[in-house]
Image (cartoon, rainbow, N blue to C red; front, side, top):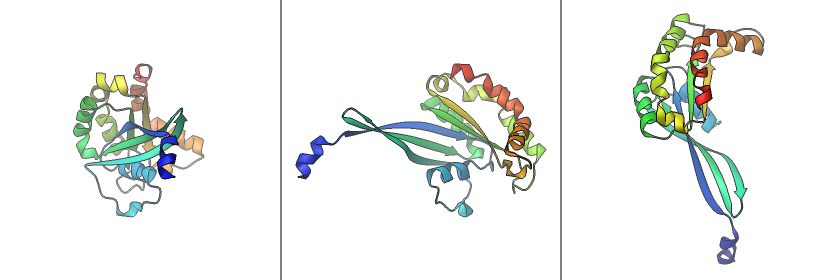
Amino acid sequence: WCKQELPTRPKLVRRSYKILTLGVSGTGKTALTLKWANPLVDLGTLRGTKVERYERTVSHVQDGDELVEHVFEVRDWGGEHIVDAQQELIVDEVHGLLIVVDLTTRDGTSVEPARIQEQLREFQPESLKFFFGPKTMAACQAVVLFINKSDVLSGTPVEIEREARRHYQRLIDDLQRYKSQL
C-alpha cells in the first residue's frame, strides 16, 4: 500500500526566507525571535548571543503536484556583533531585516533617553547605508522596525505607539528613504 501511495502524494518543496535581526546589545532581539520561533520557550534562562538561527514554517501551499513549505529562517545577531551581521548582508541573500530598538534602561524599568540616543547613533544614516548595500536592496522585501519594551509607557495603545514613534522618529524617517527601493 505504501509503495502505491507515495507516488500519489505531492512533492514537498521548501522555500526559505532569511530574516536578519539587528540591534544593540540588550534590546530584546533574542527574546523576540526565540519566542516567535517557539512560543513555549522559557525566556527566564536567556543569555546574550553571538548568533542564533531559528526556523519556523509559516505556511504550506498546494501548487499543482507540489506542496510548497514556506519557512522563515531568522538569524539573530548579538548586539556586540553588529559588524558580523553587516558582513552577512554583503555575502548572503537576505529577504527581510528586523531592526530591534528599545526604550528602556537595561533592566527594562524606565524610559532611558541616553540609551535611545545610543541606538540612534548606531543606526545613523551613515551606518544605514552599509546595511542597505546592493545585495540587500536586490533581495530584501521587508524591513521592520520593532520598538521593544514600550510597556513602560502609559496611556492607550494609540498614545503609547505615538510616544514610542516620537522617540525613534529620526530612525523611522531615515528608514523611509529606502522604502521605494525595496
